[in-house]
Length: 268
Length: 323
Image 1 (spheres, rainbow over the protein chains, first blue to last red):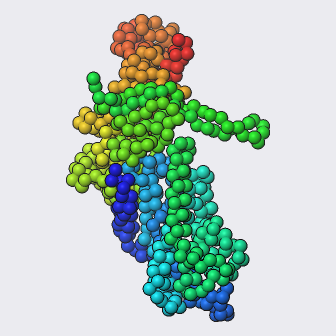
Image 2: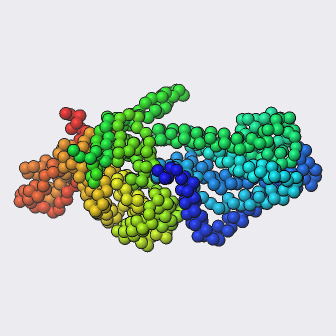
Image 3: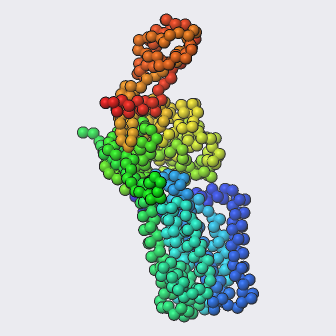
């Protein structure tokens, strides 16, 4: 029963062994980390170059955009590092690996997420953190803003965690649809790198109530920057990120259970 | 009077909904297919069971239900007192599963790392893990392969690795699906010897699905034959031969061509020049037949062909149809 109660400990054990295996080839590990950092480093440079010919985008300056960019980057980076393997669920179904996992005394989600855990994905988190740190001076820091910033990073990670799981579950129904999940996870990341004011109001509302990725960074950042909502939406939304994260994670776990149930009752 | 059986299956049923294309139209209809039905058997602790049947008979479906991968749609099923699918995680600690064609090991990791991962998953105490690993590595001769990535192992080495992986946590039941497929004769022999010893020393219950009759002969006291989703035979192997009316074939090469040989206890099936094929019951001895032929003819050579499992089963169905 302890296994059921301590999925995090099981996850940690498994991830640790994958790290050990990964660093046993130090050269290839170092090259992959450096490569990943370089690719990610160039990502923000594109936005910075854009600002050599414009002063603001959607009413936001470069450092303000850096704040949005860093927050969503850390969020997806943490989620991708911890559970990125859930994208491979279709592969596990096709190869029969999922059957193997079902005969092991560890919750399936833990096994799937910990499979081939890699530190290589830390490149994204490092780069996003650097961008966020660079952006910090734009905020007029108070205690409550420090709190909201910390909660924002946690909620962003949880939101992307939920989105990864939620949309990867589609592969229980159509096993070859990992791109579908990417549209929402990485697509969501790309959308939230910009202030929502560059998009139509309808899209901003959809990203609040349909696919709530505006809570990843947009609403908490409005609070950090002391801005009123440009779309005239209620100010209390700026504190709702943990709630949105909880809803998405709960929905994801529910869909996951349904997916596993479907799998074990069709055997396909 | 006695403890309940380790595996208890009563009227087990599993249906699948499949969509089938109607001939000549784009419409697809849903229909229900019974993969397993009215399946009843029980297995006691320490038994070695051969679970056999033609492809598509429902073998894998049954194994998947017994291991908790697949949910039954009807009937009663208990393994080690547990409902497999509902208590999947708990059951997993008490069973070991080897799918012959698919490895449970991690392709890119050295064998040792795969075993270490399993120790973490099953939370095997370190001293017991060490003792088991040392023992299986020695018995299965894997010492030189521990640092080799699984993808570089030969099929035989990988299979031995998979069997070690399935046994590290001292399971009460070991399910083996085609464990000797693709192995050479020597490897097969060693593997069978290992499994026999495992059963004798630890009392591990074995459930074996295989197409190899020799696996069954070497290992199993009892055979369950499944066809069209239900058990058509459950008993000792000798009984299977008798009930199926299976025959062995004696191939005789005479020095000279001759009319069909007439000896008691055997019937000529085919004649081709000096070579004749005689069939006789699988449970009868070949010695008196060979003796009688040798007394009457000049023999150049002879050999005996064992009935293969498919033939035995085919004959079993045919005799069943006649009855």
